[in-house]
Image 1 (cartoon, helix red, strand yellow):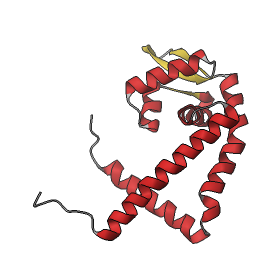
Image 2 (cartoon, one colour; image 1 turned 90 degrees about the vertical axis):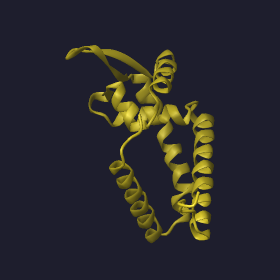
Image 3 (cartoon, one colour; image 1 turned 180 degrees about the vertical axis):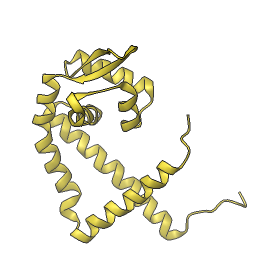
Image 4 (cartoon, helix red, strand yellow; image 1 turned 45 degrees about the vertical axis):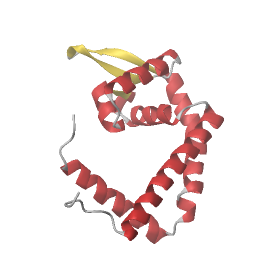
Amino acid sequence: MAGTRWLDDDQQRAWRAYLRMQAEVAARLGRQLQADSGLSFADYGVLVQLAEAPDGRLRPFELQRDLQWEQSRLSHHLGRMQRRGLVDREECPQDARGAFVVLTAAGRAAIEAAAPAHVDTVRRLVFDRLDPDEVRALERIATRVVEGLDAEPRLP
């Protein structure tokens, strides 16, 4: 413990404030999505990735990477979404063992219906509380942290 670089008081307050903010915003967004559209926050994350992908399709490993989910979580969640008709699986012609996760018409309709209320909630919970300089600072901080994370070796 002698070599541990403990957080100073300012860092500790900032870290705890960040953790509380992240948890509160995620919980409120999840409740809003469920109430307004019947989608979970996880459903919405999958649908966003697919809606923004060319032809509404991605390989499962791409979704896993983009969402930062474990393979088993992704597999189970996609199964539930497939049973609800939001996504489908298609074989990959270039890789007989591979597949694509594909956004269905029902999935596209669900994300298009959910997005307006979701973005209104994001704006109300976060961006309406910040001035333009704070928005730019938030973007710079998030980008710097993510770039640092991208440079770190990934754990298996």
